[in-house]
Image (tube, rainbow, N blue to C red):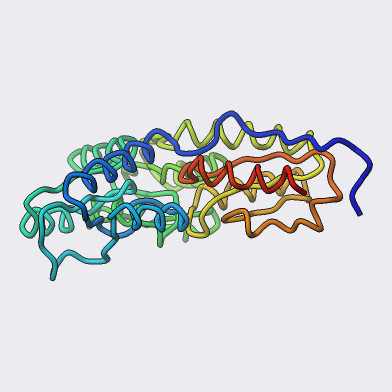
Length: 282
């Protein structure tokens, strides 16, 4: 039953695409207009609804470049391995790299650490494209990819360099770093977590503390969206993770007078607008 109150919707200021994803989308749309149809290596970003929209604009993802060729292919915002990049250059006339500058910075850090004789530790999700790219860069120097400190087996090391997937929890990064400080003679630590992601997390938590219900909008495959939901769920049990406006449980939402809205960094503004418009009718 709906409460007898005026509905208040609190939308985060840090919402919609981050700067890296926005750049990737703009490049994809620009080249789609020039060539009518362009390919992207894997998904350009991790939001299923935006990928559907991009397909309507002529942007199509492919899993491999080995058997394809053409005018243009775009490398995704989460990065590409050197092998993928080399193959793309051989088979396509033009390769557009949309990799987030922060990911490229982490790649360069790993390359420098390798030259200086450090073994590499990556904090993040093993199956994520970003960590796959970072792992590929580390090569034989990689100790492993760890999500939590308890995953570390306790081996000792001489020189260790630590970097992170751009969207991990800071607390997890620090715990892994602390463990390797205990196990190693020398550690170099780089906080490569995205500042935009951290601002979103901080703002979303504050909103969640002050509303009756919290909604996080993001793609199912989006690591930062899922982490954002996990964070707000800790402070507000009435939190929901949705991909689009059709996922809203309108009967449940009638109970709440105040609703907060946050999004992952790959969630488009048009999708957020659709969710807000649906909420206003509840």
